[in-house]
Image (tube, rainbow, N blue to C red; front, top):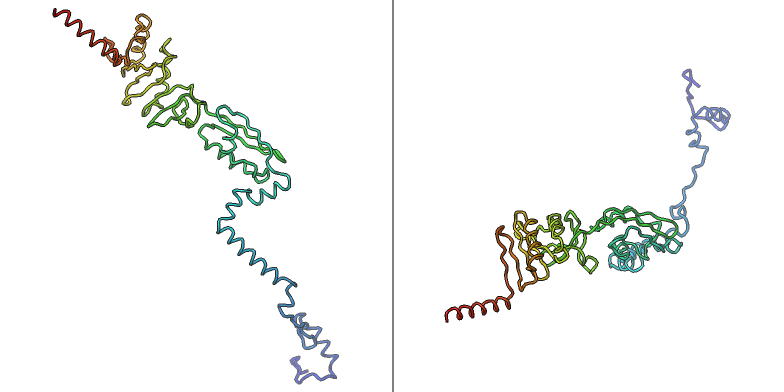
Length: 310
């Protein structure tokens, strides 16, 4: 070793003691990679992978391709429509299918209509039923004002709903709708469930429902004979009574209707051969006769004129 602490020549085998002591002073990572340590031989990648991994990967690729084709061909959608979603099928097999649905608050709707609106049928499972989605679906039904949905494991769904109260029927453009008291359309006329409700006809007649119902209430004994009310030109009402049209004025129609009630009580005007009563003029009542009555009246007038001429 020179004065600077360096070796001036190579180490010989005889100096192995000194070499060992120097090796102890080297950092650990240098001692590991020193000439006295053999590097660990590396294995080929094929030997390092688990046996059978290639076959599994190939099978997975074929399965993915088959699933993609199954979905793209539309057969998956048909399968779901017929049997339900795969996880619902697994839940049903495990004993969590929907076997009972309890519905409260039904007034006008049928149970089958509620179930159809909720999207619940034999393919549904309790664990995978989204109660928030079901509630939103129910609230899209105009007749349902509010709803709540909960699950009771293992097999029951409970639906509590509050229905809007139908107030009248509204006919417009040949179609009849069921409306609430504020005129909101809440259903369509599909059967005779709503046949007993009052009927209003014409554009904007639904928004004037309160006015029409007040008129009927003021009709007294004639209220039961009123079959419908037509809102004419956005200004006035014409009432339909047993084949007789009653034309009310735009201003104070209730007073005009009271005149008709008095005329019917004293003179049975509605029992005559007439098809219309016009009350739009405050100082008179104009009636329109049936064709037969009009012909008979014309014939009587002719005879009267002939008799007067002779």
